[in-house]
Amino acid sequence: MDASPPLPPAPVELPPQQWQAIRDAYATPPRVYHHFGHVQALLRHFGEVAQGPGWNRPREVWLAMLYHDAIYQAGRPDNEARSAQLARRHIEQWLPDAGVDAARVVQLIELTARHGALQPADVDAEAALFLDCDMAILAAPAPVFDAYDRGIAREYAGHVPALLFRINRRRFLRGLLDAPRIFLSDWFHQRCDAAARANLRRVAG
Image: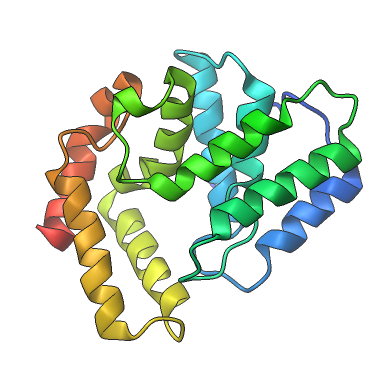
């Protein structure tokens, strides 16, 4: 039985066709980590933040979480940009009168391409919380973190030579560990920094 907490209420209602299009996107190609389960994890963090510091523009953040990895092919540099444009098209198609700022959704999704290269001063407070939701896996219990790390490796297998992947992956994780801040928001920094650094030291330290 799935012991995961329930998903928080959606701040905007999507038609069934849109939900199906999103789920179909996350099933293509088959994925080990970046599947719809990853989106559900972010949506749970969305609910936690809503109960904590709160969201100023919850519809845009929620939609960015839904779409941020909708298009994902390991090793491609344009996954985020393509996912952002898919989100824009779907908003225009299915939510034209919902009052959603599609440009903000696009901006948030495109920022995920810069994980590990941003500092708190580079983004606004809400974008920081959004990005930290995506990075919260780094602070997961060790078995969950290790499954995530193996999942990423399996997604890249066959797309990037194994040695090159290991070198680049360790460089990325080591860069996070060496950074003054892993999490951009104070809220996630206070709750997650110690656990994230423990995981990173274990695999890349």
